[in-house]
Length: 542
View: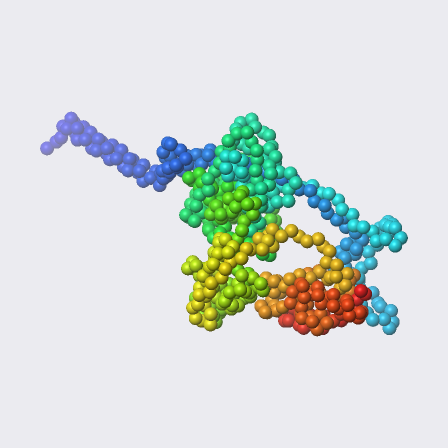
């Protein structure tokens, strides 16, 4: 049976409609598949009344809230530096070997190591006869740039200690109102080198926008954050990233200090960001930017995606104390500690904890039952897994607090109670450098000696129980120059044991009173990884 033209067209028409509907439906389904991954999660911030629908809007809202509360800080320092003298140049050239072999000595004369004789190119400078030329000093001015953020509406600002420490003039520029390009003078309230935090105060005739501290403990790795500051002098710069890691530790500004509970971020941080805030998407400060990692040998190359911030929980403890009492008081045990290696864990019968390697004399720990070689595993029931855990647990408590230490002694559990003292200033980085006087030390032997700390002993690969003082500097023209080397450990003077700087000073005084024109030193010296014991005599002219 043949189909008519009308029936054929109607049949084809129905097929075309079906095909078109199929194409439209397929396109709709394909659109969902293609665009679904691009839909960004909704973010709701308590800092705005309107619900946010995109992550982009979240960043914009946080930046708008944070930027007015972030300031630029410039600090000027004036330092007096000694100009180099002839002995300085002589000492510089002594470090180089004689280029054409050592000169021949005279016949019958004992051969001594050759030293350069430095001569001024246009003749020796004149100086009054019989009078040693006084060293000359010159003033040098330097300016540092950093960032900070407003802690309270009345003008307290938080920044880094290294931004403002030692500054003679501090200026702050605000960005909370338009057309205010003035730089306001600021007063330094206090610094805390132990945490690298500082507080300054500015008097402004208006209420300032402030940021609040969030919880760094609740912050999570992978969480979005933004950094605001003045990198390389570019004010009001906003960068975004995530929290890359938590609980980092960094070396501090002295051998007694290291920074702990540090947040690592890949939000771009550069020179000038120091002191600026690291803010979460709720507009809260979770960190204070403090340092960056840079590739050697070009540390000035800038950001490589590894920046560090002081945890906000640390600032919560430190900043109020700096404002109220101008310093931070911390608990102190007075012990030397070290991490447990797998072998030490086995030897001391501890799965975790911190080994007590030494107890300082006249310290809080020395007045308790705590002993060297105890392994501390908890403080007031709080688990201690590493040295930073122990330091944090002790420093967070006030002096005079009675703490209970859970320890492992002779592979058996034991509890020890210790009444904490107050951390001495030098361990908190607060002790001012002493004048370089050291009359008996410098005049008698030409040595500058220092305390033999556990860290120095470790660096020199000395046994942990080594006692003595360490030769920090050796005067090239002094009596001990031929016999003592930098890094030598002095353990005895004229057979009198030397265990401390006081012992050293007392032994020098007794040697002087003896009337003899020589001093006998017992030394320890590391040579090719081995400890060598030396006994040397030094001629002196009292």
